[in-house]
Image (cartoon, rainbow, N blue to C red; front, side, top):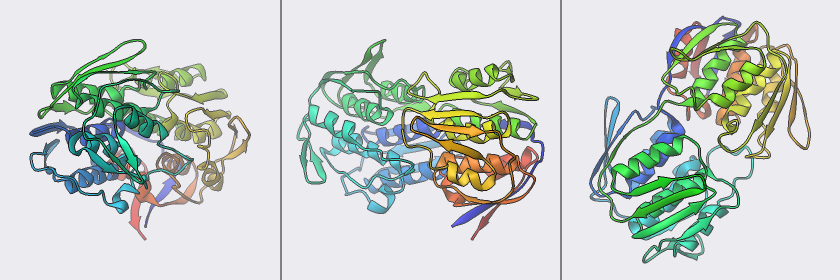
Length: 407
């Protein structure tokens, strides 16, 4: 176990470069397992979730070499092995093993997928898709002697199941089509990677068409992490500072920036991204499938609302994603939780002790501690480091008083 020790109320200023996107990196890592030969990925972030993902494909025989910002993955000697339950239980994106192992080996053992347990997160879309492409279930195992192309429609967009569709369809002879897919920008990174590997992929207003087959080694550059960028911008506002965020696409953050503008913030995207505000009016944050406000920034926004004029956080992606609020309450955040979401009340942030119950909820606690006078401890720091690279180093360079400590 570990913790962050934070002495808050320092105004954060300076320039920070975001790492590669966690949500873009993980699909590419697992997709590399389906390719024959060596692949090159530029910009994988040095975070806990990436480390686990690389270890999971190493279990399947992938050879991995990291040289600076470049990661080389060779799968010529890949062969199936039941994934380690301990590793799978720590990473929600281990669901991508379903598509990767079925594509490469014709089999996979499923179950025990981990990551942030902020609400129930079933894999029924993933399994139904696999069945439509010819996979047979036997207990906790799926097998497919030969995958078949399909036309399939999700009841509602799912990022994870869309990733598995792309991985499966790119390795399947023939043309497949997915209707009502997720459209998050980080899926574009996977599309670029699979196109580089030899797959034909086209996206239109209704869905995604893929013509697949045997794929060769590929290369891609991971885009900058928009969620890290949003977190740093929130840190700038909550401390009354002036942080310039570099490396993220402002267009990907447009729902977040639009809400800040409507609340009275000044947003500049000419050179990097900066936001400034002497005050913010109440905000209504409704997280939903892209291009709506991203669910991962819902927790990040909560302490910001509390520090200014309050507002509402409503999550329509994960309906129960409010567990972090009980930890924010230990740092002074007042809220009322109802059937449709959370009302965040204007609050005086106070130093205290809280825990990272999930990745983004932990980051929200750090933000609250940065905005509070005095000494705070945020426990389960390792949970936050699953998704933020060099967090203490970056915050310290901006003027924060933050330490990482092993308990």
